Structures are given as structure tokens and as C-alpha cells.
Length: 365
Ligand SMILES: [Zn+2]
Image (tube, rainbow, N blue to C red):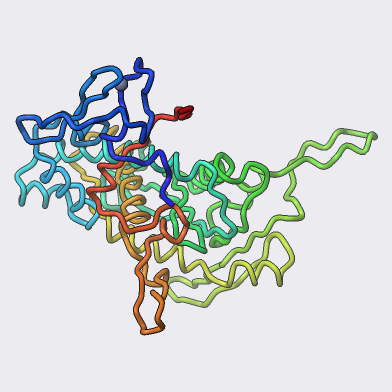
């Protein structure tokens, strides 16, 4: 049930010039002792090249131990600040950020593989306000590389899987980037059914991404304006506030038959809001004032990528659990990735870091 190219680094030959390069389960790899530090070494019988078990992972060639790196990255996904990690473990913030950047690159490769053609039926989109460089105090000037940012998330309603994210200075920019993600993955021709709040320019972004100009009738000026299509489903959950007072919500069906849309999408955006709440808990204090400006946005992006895949693969979500047979009230916990059929078990953070994407080679033998 797991993708055949998601494997441990010791499963294939890493030598690109080898005839058996990248072939998984081909029988050419044998264990070949250990390094001084105790890391398993492997040898390819075909080309005689050797490599270690941490090849292609965040642990490769590091001065710190695997346990230390693993622990710090796990703490980052558990709401710990860089300052706290520094105090407890004595490791420099810069060092931990370096690991985080690698970890983000790593999970993005896994993401690209797993979500390449991910088709969803129903999506919730939302953007969360966050800050880079200062904590949103009044009086700070907006600058290109710091100040407030929007972090947008696409969540699959049926599996709670986070299937896309975008970070930007403007909500409109984020909305467009989220739609581009959907289009590039499982939705080249038309959007999935979407629920969002009333803000964030999602409607415009949908039209810009998938809209089509009407057919030319052969007379007059050729129509160029892109339009929404009849098979789209889009609903807005608009929150009414008067000052700080909560005044309830209004449901607005923007595209599609109202009854159909309501049946499909429900009347709330609770899932994505729930996931954003989790996000706040997971990495709210990560991005530090002490970093240089140019590093901050980069680090926010890295922490979001890391956090999304810790969430998708290693966290069980209570509402996703299924009864484990016998009707004796025993439940099998499931992660969003399990619910989405991308894996058959809840991963550990170590597994997430030690699983690499094998090269795309066709096994002919
Ligand atoms: Zn080889």
C-alpha cells in the first residue's frame, strides 16, 4: 500500500553510472559492515560502490548524532522554540535551522511523489495570518521580508490530508498559489469542490486558474474574459462580526447547484480551521527575531513544509479512527495519509527522516 519508491536509503544503488542505479529490490545491494560511528554500510554487487544508511537524509555527514538531530526536529514540530532547544540541548539556533531546511527539502520530495496526481473530491481552503520577524506589534512597517504573512492551506475534507500550502504577503497571492498547486497535481482541467471563508480572493483565483473564455460565436469581438464553468462547486462560509462581536455565519453558494453544493461541502470550514489551530500549536514561535531578514521567509516556508508532513504521516487524527473489527469498541488510529491510502501505518518522525525517494528508473528485470 506504500509507494514503491518510498524506501530506506540502503535499498538501492546510488551510483548513477551503475547499470543497476536506483533499482529497488533487485538483489544487488548487500550489507557491508559499519562505519566507526556504527552506521550501517552497504555495497552494490554490480558496481562495487559502497554507501551508508544515512545517504540522502538529513543525518548524512553531520557532526551531531542522529538522536540529537532527530530529537531537535521532533521538538520543532511540538511547539518548541529554537531558544528553548538551545537552552536545553546547547545547540545553536543556526545549526537547528540548517537541519530544518534539510528536513523541509526532504519532505517536499516525498510530498511531490505522493501528491503528484492526488485528486480530491472536496477541499477546504484557508489562510492563517502569521508573522515573520516581529510578533505583530503595532507600529512595525511592512517590509518585503518581514512583517505579516499569510499561510494558506488546502485540506482534503475526506481525509484531513494537507495537500498544499502557500506563503505570501497578500491573501490574493496565496489564493492563486494554492489553486496553482491543485492544478499542477490532480486537477489540471477543473477545480475540486471548494469551501473557504468569505475573504482571500479565492473566487478570482479559481477563475484565473481554470476559467475558460466563452466559445467565439463568429461575430463581433472575440470574448477573452475567463469564466467559471457549470460543473464547479464553490461555497463560502462568511463570518459576520461587528467589531469584536460574533454575529453568526452566512453560507453563500458561489458556484454550482445550491443543494448539491451544501450536500457536498457542508456548512462550515471547521476542518481547515482545526488544522490551522494545530499549526499554531506546532510552530507558532519558531521564526525568530534574531534571524537575518532574508532567512525569515525561507525558514517560515521550511517550518510549514516540515510541520505539514509530520502532521500528515505521523499524527493520528481522532475522527479518522476506524473500528478494528469484532465490534468490541476497539479502534484503529489513523493518520491523514492512511485515510488517503498513501500508507498503511502511522510513521515515526525517524521513519519520516529515514525514508527517501528512490530515483525514477523503470525496473526492466
Ligand atoms: Zn551499483
